[in-house]
Image (cartoon, rainbow, N blue to C red):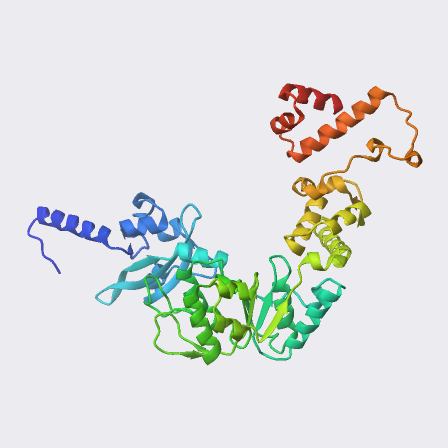
Length: 468
């Protein structure tokens, strides 16, 4: 214990102490025997996004909020004498902002009595948020083979191949363009396998930076890097179950090599660890391009491809199974009827014809979005027609509205139809129709529409008012 000769020396020591405390790259928070904050350093202010005046001399419970089933590690140290090391804690500051830290917390003793508590914290708020938002989807499988809509020979063949693959634990590579339903097949395989009562974990390999994905997949050892805790990776979490690695070609070549080792040796090593952990996981992977192209261009290791593609499923794009469009449309109509509490019965045959002519680069996902968008524009109608299609879709070259029948040219005598309307009325109708279509083409941007029509903005607004 220091002894101070005078007040001046005490004041000087306090300055040094405060300066040293604020230079520490960890949050320091000390409370007294009443639970009031008496020390709160600069780093803690940064971690919790608060000013010292918001916290100092105030009771901890009056400032911070904790989940109902959790207690502050500081208060546990104060009231229970509990020491915690490297414990993750999530709580809220006085603005309701979520904070996540790794804490080392100790009671402060004097003559055997607890007179306060100290906590040293490391901030992992951003890391936790990133992992939570882009991390694994660990849950029940929502989809089974019955969820796959289609009667075309192309889709039936793939379904049959996938059903056969459920009998074993071999790796499966699911190949298909974006929006073809690759994860639906993956979940169906897991659901129909003998692993269906074990975990199914899905991770998009493109969703996280390389610096995080390795620890997320293989786990971390405490102290491997700043803020690293003893955390099992996705492979350990999926043990005895199934892991789906979506967009496998997004993994770096280095991580692909580590993944290959896991597949070959059926064990893994956490980041920062020196020992191996045995695992029993079935690996399903998806790729949104031709594997041989990815290999040639260096996005996929040749040896990893052969390990993953023990079974290969090639999911056909929608343009190769267009006779499934009516079934898919009806499925989506029923889905959104239930979701939006609507009673849409069907879609116009003319719209189905246009759907058949379209190539659907976004595949089934694009078709689903078009139906959802159309049903958002329906009022009291019970069917989807051309006017309900989302404007961005109507404006595609293939879908620009044809000239109405009354304005079609007459080429043959057999086509002749008598016209009974006065010329001015007929021209007014065509002008209204044409202006409406140009406005739709430009998403009702009056300036752009006027420019295409060769009118001034004021002139176009006048005509719009006249026709409204």
